[in-house]
Length: 217
Image (cartoon, rainbow, N blue to C red; front, side, top):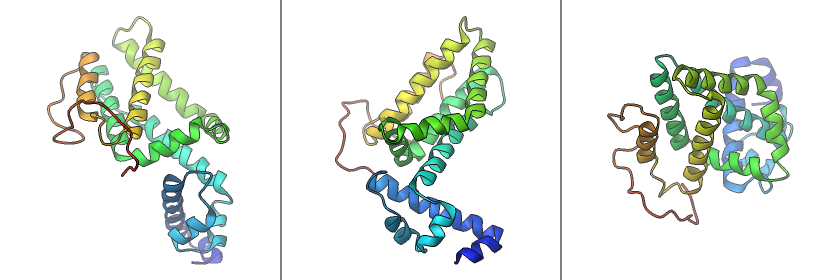
């Protein structure tokens, strides 16, 4: 597919953009931001460099898209209906399921957030998504207010801190981290009904000692 074709066919353009995005994400996960090259992405996507740069002029543009999508994926989780307890349970379960299904993405996002040379990109992503993030915070604070919390803002910060810590641990320890059991424990901590079925795996690993592995899946 040429650049001219991409410009002419909207549906093909979107398909090709997703193909290049997926290839770029895979390479960044495998090699990291600093070692990944456009040549790597070109080879993985099976397209020309000109076509890649038509969609993503540089690695920075690709990383911006990755960070935007990752922020959106979690902000979307508060858009659920039901009673306050039902909504809180759904939000917790949504974070656990999203984390379990996107551990490579979460490892990449974490590396981008904490590295001094890429942290500014994350800060800019938060600025671009300010309305979404503010909406997420407000929705959680309203939820805790409806549950009778004395300090809904503090409860929002606490929940996000716990969930973000879980995302970090699940990304670093993908084999040992007992997501399903922690999900049940979090339901218990917030006085929610105990889950009646497994969300992530039917036989979660026992809670043991966590050690980082040399390679991840």
